[in-house]
Length: 152
Image 1 (tube, rainbow, N blue to C red):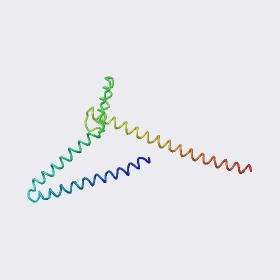
Image 2 (spheres, rainbow, N blue to C red):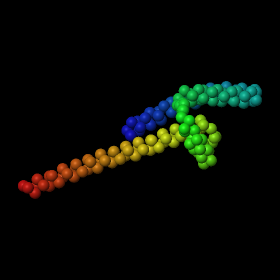
Image 3 (spheres, rainbow, N blue to C red):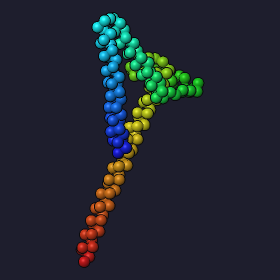
Image 4 (cartoon, one colour):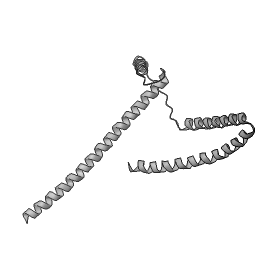
């Protein structure tokens, strides 16, 4: 848990840094667009849409670089259960499109979420056991001291 808190602080610093990059970049773009807008408002709006299009392209580029892609192959014996479960998930609204890819993605995400929940519960149980062990050791030390006092 300590590592996660440290990472959160680092994350905030990184986000502030990149927010600053974005603000500095956009200051120049906004200034130029305002100047352009004074002479040709329609062209300024088209230019702004072009800027947003460029940002979107770069966003997609970064997204594709950091995403996790996995190909899933199941044996033929799993086809009927897979399709039945896919249909069920779609009927329940758990997936927005009735496709193998969306259902496989949903399955992987669900399994990962469940595993993370189990891992967290196990970590909490181990921490609880460690605290209880420390407390019982402290109590046994106190009882030993009491026994020594009684013997004297």
